[in-house]
Image (cartoon, rainbow, N blue to C red; front, side, top):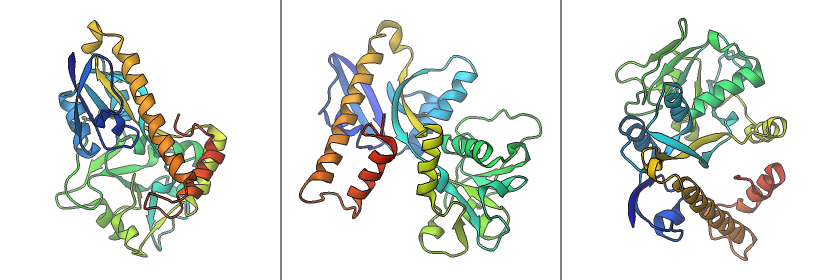
Length: 288
């Protein structure tokens, strides 16, 4: 039996493998669960794990630079619509994302997949010339955050880290940057601070419209396998893919069972409404 490390965050679509509910014949999985904030730098810089969750943009960047230690599978552990992640300061003259051209915006990491999609949305959906934007990178509200891979940017593109002790949220509130592109809402916004507002207030409607126009449910993270393993075991690709496909089916079946059951077993008031909207907008296989 071959022993391989498997490391992901605790997504419901991955947990059947971590718990052993789904097995891979001939493979003894050594399971570890880590938040992606700590997992991705290790995967990108050290390639320590045999099977790992991986940022899609990080993988693209590594592949573009030559041989990479990992091969990626079309197993999408994280997907997310991103119109909900544009924030500006209340009282500024920015009314929509279309007005972010020529502005200074904050983003935790320039290369992060959420930022890649959001810049694409700015360009394709709102007509923003990305070459006019100046970016500041760093922690959203606490701690320190750095690019997990070194950037090699075209001449004239401005991407600068924040200073020591600075955070993107504070810079926005203090007027030193004009907007935020972030995969999660700033804590001050969630706490009801009226100084921060979404640039796409009805973001769910905008995201559903984006899906209708493009067919995209944006991919954030993939599953990656240590490429050296595949030299002797190319069959691992299909075996691991099939295992994650079964795990996802278990997760979706459980959600549907809860949705259609007599009592909601999840602590979420409008689970049923959310499931109905997802199926209506994307289809029954809403996490393909």
